[in-house]
Image (tube, rainbow, N blue to C red; front, side, top):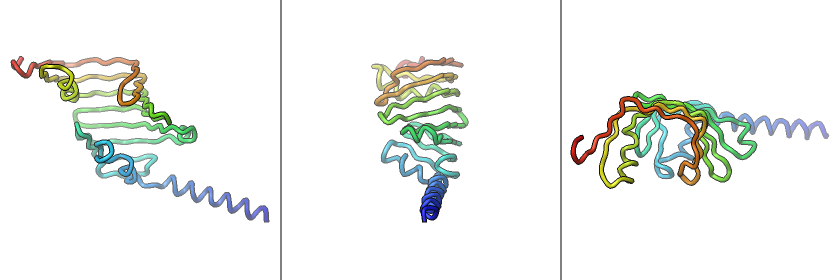
Length: 172
C-alpha cells in the first residue's frame, strides 16, 4: 500500500509539472496588459517559459520580435528571472531582467542600440524648453537596479552616435 501512495504522489507531481511547463505563452497577456501597465504582446507563440511575440506595444513605442526565456531556479527562491531580446528596425536590446519579492527590478548584461528620440517625451517633461534628440545610444550595462520605478544604480557604458540636439522653439 505504501508503494501505491508513493507512485500516486510521483504521478501527481509529474502531471502538475507537465501542466506548468506547457502553459501557452498567450497567458502572459493576463500579467502584462494595456490596462495594468500599458504594454501588450501581439501574435504570441511558444510557452510562458520560452516564448516570442511578433510585436510588443507600449505607450511610447511599437517593438517587433520580442523573445524571452524564464529561468526556473530563481522561481524556487521567489524571484522571476528572464533572458530577453528585442529586435526592431530601429532598436536592438538583449539582456536579463530579474524581479525580486520586494519589487526591486534588476536588469543585467544589457546590450543594444536605442534611438535617442525614444527619450524626447521624458526629457521634455523635465526641462522648461522643448528639445528633440536624434541619433543613437549604444548601451553596454553590467547591471541596472530599479526600485519604485526609479533607477537606483547602474554600471556600464553609453556611447552616443550621430547625436543631434534640436531646440524646437528656435529650430536649431
